[in-house]
Image (cartoon, rainbow over all chains, first blue to last red; front, side, top):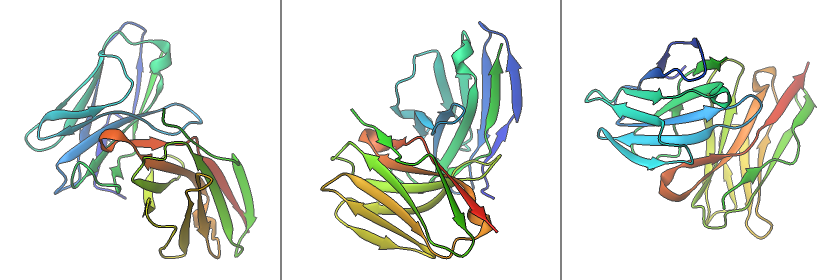
Length: 113
Length: 111
């Protein structure tokens, strides 16, 4: 098991609502990346945070936003939820921004109805 | 654009046999290619990576082969065990250090 934890485990929201997902990185890791994994697909990169700043972003709209805190934990916020946002959201921490070995948490399963 | 895909969505092997999981990629500019394993209910777990200037790299019971001529990547698992049953993803290091994952291959190990 990695030292990356995510909360909550499962979440059900209604279309149009807002959601905040949380991630605690592994000790010693200063970089956090967020991924969206739809059922039966590979993870899709949302963005990466390093030193509390966004450090790279995938093809996701601005309603996906994030934060990183001084202790390197992170939040993913999604506004105006859409049905297609239903997915497993994965957080991964790494020892530096270019690391190939990322340590993933178990994910948060978000269902939008 | 970038895309990474897999030839076989499901692979079934007998315990003790060797497994080969294949992957095709399209971005010749990627610096690294990486394999991840995802077990049910867990996040992906790093297995092994290979730099684009290499054609082979070995780890513990795993070997990754890179053929840049045909843009093909493979993961070989020796003496496959029941604990190897999982979904395997290849990924490439894209622009800005982001990982671009393929769709995945399910590996089923029969005892």
